[in-house]
Length: 281
Image 1 (cartoon, helix red, strand yellow):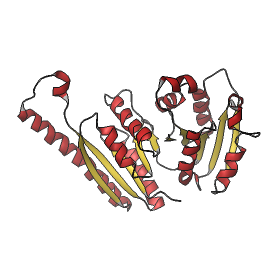
Image 2 (cartoon, rainbow, N blue to C red):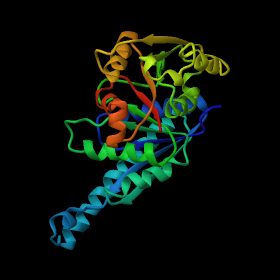
Image 3 (tube, one colour):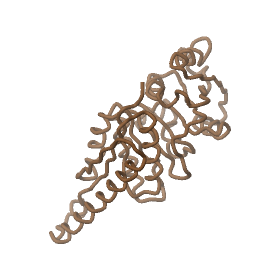
Image 4 (cartoon, helix red, strand yellow):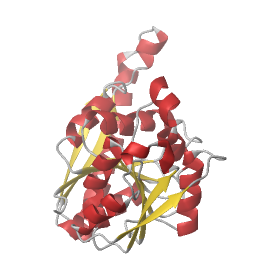
């Protein structure tokens, strides 16, 4: 069950090249089309400041933004042509507040969307986070996040599934199967299963491993009991120990209820991730 339609967000961040490479690599492997989307954000300076900007300045801003977006799509198309991958590109003209909703609409018609982990040192970090969260929680489709440092092309050798037996984790595993097939070692990581006894069965992880085997994914189970440190820290440490280059997990939104129930695991991992993260909601 290969992917057929992929989406990649295009911008001027340092990690854009890495996520484009990852998207094109997967697209070539699956015979999928890759859609590159750049944003031509309309200036909202006037509305924030409550003043009128001279039309000449506003027109100049629009031309500059449109030119930058076109450069991004042209660069993407050149790389896709070089890679021999079917592709299409589009420029979305909208205000910053509408961008997540529009991106989610386009992602809804794709199998997987590629974004980058927000870099806290960049001014655009909050906006980037709003984009991938908009897709993750509004599109019904999974997201692949590339870390903001290092080189992470899509060459998965050791994949880790953060398994808590939840509906969201099950959705993430199902969505990630095309990435896990034929990709070397896959580990089902279960942390403190006794806290959710009804979610794991008599042998935690066995049922999931049996399910994945039906798709030719050979998964091993690793159960860790550690209540001295947080679940997200256990997962991140395990990723480092395994030298894993993919984490598959379910995603919970940022509600206070979720943070109380799950300890903000999703949020912590996204901001501290050391390997690409595949998430479904």
